Each structure stands twice: as C-alpha cells, then as structure tokens.
Image 1 (cartoon, one colour):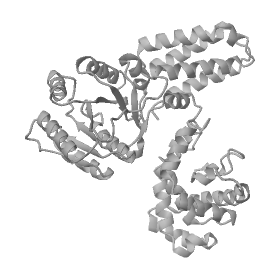
Image 2: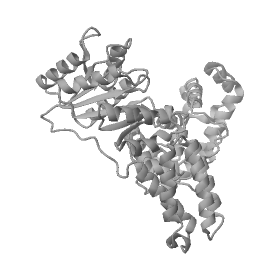
Image 3: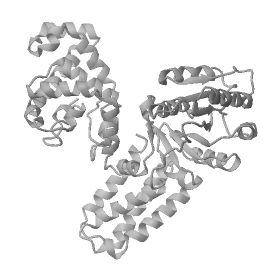
Image 4: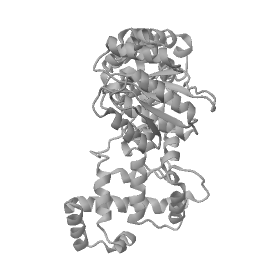
Length: 459
C-alpha cells in the first residue's frame, strides 16, 4: 500500500507514547516532530503539514489529554480525527442525475495517470448501480487510445462511441451525447486526451467541449506515484478549466502517498475514488475515515467485509463450512481458499485491512507464490487432492516435476497444507452455530478469529 512507510513510522511514534504512561507537553511536542518528519517524507505538502501539526498540537496539549487516564490513546484519536478532516471528512458520493436524463462526466488528466482505464472502471461501477453507461472515445492523439478504451469497456460490458482518430474531440463528444440521448443511456463518460504535461492546447480542448455540450461533472485523474506533482497538476486543472472532483490512481504502488493527504486541502475538491489495482473492483470509493485508519495501522475492516462480499462465492463458502463441520479439508478446498484470497487482492492486501496486521512479518511471503501453489495442486491426481495421505516421496517428485518446482518447494507447500488442515479441523467445532466469521468469508487463517495466532502463515 502507498502509505506503508508512513504507517510504520507513525506506529513507532505512538508506540513510544504508549510506553510513557503519563505524558508531558514536551513528550507530545517531541512525538509531533516525528509525525511532521514522517509526513514530509511521505511527500505531503509542507504548508499542509505545518497546519496539520499546529491543529493537532493545539488539541493534544490541552488539559483533556494531559489529565486523561489514557493520554497516548487520546493523542492517537486526535491525529486520526485530523487526518480524516485533512482528507475531506465525510465521504462524498458521485451525484448522478435522474435515470431519464443523461449525466455527462468528463475525465481529464495527464498521460500515464491511468485515465482511460479508470474511465472504463468507473463505467463498470456505475453499470453495477443500474445505470446505462456510454463511453466516448475523445483521445484521438495517443496511439491505440481508442482501442484501449474499447478493450477495457468490453471487460466491463459497456458500449463505446467512437468516430475514429480523424474527427475532433469536440465533435465526438457532441455526437456521443446525441447517441446517448437517442438510445436512452443515462450516463455519458467522455475520455479526453492526456498530455505529458499541462499545456494550453489541452486546457482549450476541455473548455471547448464544455462550451459545446453540458458537462455535469469533470473528474481529474491523478497518479499518486507522482507525489507533489499530482497536487500541482490538480491545482492547474482546477484553476484553468474547473474540476468537480478527483480520482487518485496507483495507491497500491510503491509510493509515499502524500498526494492523497494533500490534494483535498490544496484544491478544495473531493476525492471520489481511489485506484488500488488493475481490476474493476480495485476502483474503490474513497472513505477518509477508512484511509486514516489504515495509515495509523488500525485496519479497515469495513472495506475488508465489502471486498469479501464482492469477491466470495457464498454458495461455495456454505459448502466449505459444511465440510469443516465434518472435519473435512482436502487439497481442492485448500486451492479454493487460495483462489478466493487471490480474488480479494492477495494475503498482503487482506492483512493491511486487519487491525494490527499491516506490518506482520510474512517471512518473505510473496503473493505470487499463490500461483506456484496452484500449479502444484493442479499437478496432483484427483485421488491425491481428495486423499492427502497418499502423498509419498515418489508422488512428491512427480508433482515437483509436473509443476516446475523443486522438491523442497513441494514439501513446504504440503507442510503448509497440513498446518491449515489441522487448524481447519479445529475450526469445525468453533464454527458451529456461528453465522459469520472470517473463516466463513473465505480468508485462510482467520476462521477462529485472532485466537492462537496465525499458524498457517508460515510461508
């Protein structure tokens, strides 16, 4: 996640505060100096950091905190509340017009920010909400931009209006609106051209489209990996063409993430969505409170539950629960659990949403290992998958050769399976009478809650 480094540093600061018991004003100020450095290193705008620290300090050195029985917790609570306020406070939902009218959304942004892909993802999101969406291919300059939009639109089952790369973007937008009105689409998303940098031609083109047709909402796509540049870009667009909201992409990347903490305060515009990966479901509504919670290492259980509900096959999970109650757990079950986990973004993503689990030592675990485990299980015969006791040395050698792994890797996976099998059998009794638990959500290792640690995480 983008805020991994910032999260680690903030958690270290708060850990030192907790160790002090009673806090002095000097303790709080020293801790806030560390928080300030951590935010600056995360590429948060300097002016924003200065105001943030000032606001926190004014509240944190007050009598309410100093006289509290849990002063460290009070300071953390204040930092959390100020982080939420910094990112906009309450989440803002994208407002759409009535179903019998066409809501026009124009996507803007620099080249490479993921605008075209995001336009298709947004179309897919709105389609899931019952809207009839039409995408307009107005990027006539970048090679294969129209094709890219068409391919992504096909993935989410949304139509594209195109006049090729010989027509002007303004004419295409106008033609798309006519088609949307005639064919009873109720959302039109216009994918405009990006540039390598902000220039007058780009701004004029956006303004010309707005002059020709009514645009209800202009969304700016910014790349979190560009740090302060993303904030500068947002400011330029906001001043020159006007924007109504922001979508931040690549928040799953190896980046400091300061843009997400700065951009709302600098532009005054809400962040509607955050791009956390390549899949449709990885475009997520932006919740300031949930993001603050993840930054502070407090997890994001609500987003985890939503992700599970979107990704998990409930019928398969009911069958799995039934098998667990009968103390059955085979390699087919193991593979199914791994696939469910992969659909939800992998183990590292899930752990980042679990309170206190974001920085768990995974002993070198890599989500790509799920693919290797899948290859090993698929190299087994049907009988071997159903009856794990058959796994003798000769069979292990054959599986290693068939899956392209060495024997040590196969032995490691079998040991891991045995650990999970043992735990799942123990879960059989625990799950009786429970309607919901993390085990019933398809997340390996969380079936018995947090009791007894995570024995199957010895990857």
